[in-house]
Image (cartoon, rainbow, N blue to C red; front, side, top):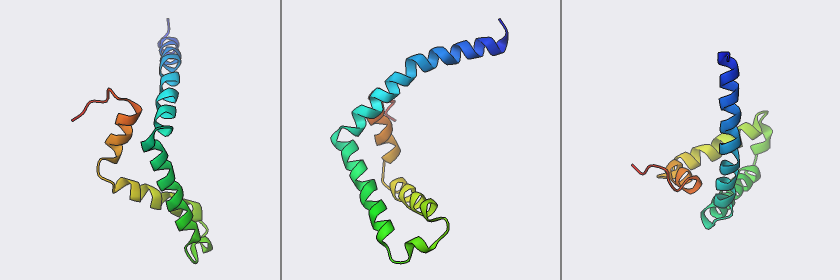
Length: 94
C-alpha cells in the first residue's frame, strides 16, 4: 500500500472509534451538574458583555466577547484539567 492510503485507512479507523466516544463524553459532561454550571456561567458572562453600554459600537464585537469569555475561563484555577477530567475520567492526574 502507498503511504497515503495507509494513512487514510488509519485515520478512518480512528475516527470510527474515537468520534462516537468524544460525542458521548461531551454529552455526559454537558448534562452533568458541572457542565450545566459551565453553560450557565458562559451564558451569563455573554449576556452581561452584550448589555454593557457601548459594547456593540465596535466592528469586531463578537470577537471581543469571545476573547473576554476565554480570558475569564483561563483565569479559573484548574479549568483545563477539570474539562479534561470531565470528558475522560481516565485522564492522567498529575
